[in-house]
Length: 103
Image (cartoon, rainbow, N blue to C red):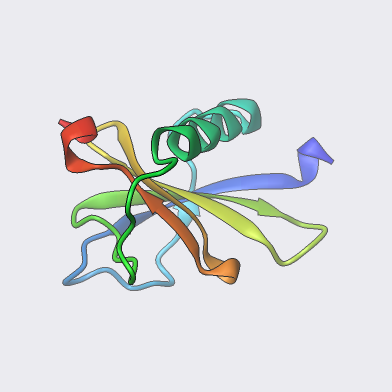
């Protein structure tokens, strides 16, 4: 099923981005790399308080992984080349890195 998985990126500028603005992933991440980054953010945020309402970090880019066999997708938000948040939007599950880990 790996060939049925697609990655896309979207620009997230909180003031101007349209939620539907999408394009092909130009990050060069493979599915394995995407999964590794997602799991790293999960581990890095374990036990940390998370915001009650998720707002993508301003200026970040969302990279999401689609599975053509089901409606689910997972996302990573990247800012200046570094992951800053992850999510499974359909399940309202999000994790944001502490700003001290980002800089």
